[in-house]
Amino acid sequence: MNIHEYQAKQVLKGFGAPVAAGVAITSADEAEAAAKSLPGPLYVVKSQIHAGGRGKGKFKELPADAKGGVRLARSVEEAVAHAREMLGNTLVTAQTGPAGKQVNRLYIEDGADIARELYCSLLVDRATGRVSFVVSTEGGMDIEAVAHDTPEKIVTVAIDPEAGVTAADVAKINAALKLDGPAAQDGETLFPTLYRAFVEKDMSLLEVNPLIVMENGRLRVLDAKVSFDGNALFRHPDMLALRDETEEDPKEIEASKWDLAYVALDGDIGCMVNGAGLAMATMDIIKLYGKEPANFCDVGGGASKEKVAAAFKIITADPAVQGILVNIFGGIMRCDVIAEGVVAAVKEVGLQVPLVVRLEGTNVELGKKILNESGLAITAADDLDDAAQKIVAAVG
Image (cartoon, rainbow, N blue to C red):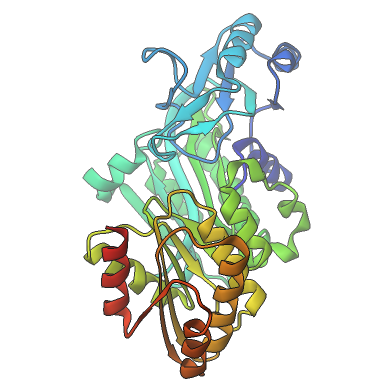
């Protein structure tokens, strides 16, 4: 689960991280009071969407030379003008795709005198099996280019889970970021604080980009991106309360209600599979035969008839879907349960696109019998290769 920048900063502030004063608004009428409540005279008006690259983004409804989704304002009046122009419009960034995201919230923040922009993030490093700091002196909007062009400028520091962030770890991070004086002293407090927030709140990503050194030599969290491990949210109702469903795909929201692993994609062949590895293989073979998957959908190993039916309805509700491939290898999951769920869903919502079903494993013959006797226009497949070829041919 992702949260907005202003929410992430409030979480980090609660742990003691240095962040600027700011006010989140949802209406341009709130902008004047928000700006006047801040010290000024410099303000930053930031679009709040779940996507990066906001500063370089462009609004669909505004002229091409209009400013992006993060703007400086040198007066209250200018902050209000930015708010009126940004709210309600669609911001397109490198991470939103061409459709963009509508800006429904802004964060008006007190400005800062920036001396240096740094990069700092925490994530679980699969190579070491530990939470690691990833830091660079090259912070700001082009960190992706740094990772691609000059990876030697990015330093990773793995943290021992038993020891936590030690003085030696802080020294490595400070050295990598070339911090000294007051900034290095702030690092001795900030880096253990970020690690504690990451671990205690079960985050999967904590990114501060940029982490700035101000003209007075102190550190400040200027931007923050936080993602949480969805499997741990039951332990954090306070974090779950920060969820903004308007930023999520409605199909993914519905899937979460049924505990389905569902991710919307840009293709035209819907997939319903049991098991993440099999789902990836299914999507790969669809691409091999020249088409693109419309979704990743894993119904899991112990799905009920009702859960399968729900998954099928979610897939068919996507107008981009021109065909559906059901690929089930029944181990714990029984093929007859899958067949019953598919038949029930088709009878309820109808079938307007080609449907190919490949079943193998537990109760496979019973599953095929249920499909064959359903009277529905379902194409059976012998194996995955056969199934992929048939659905691609049916979609054309």
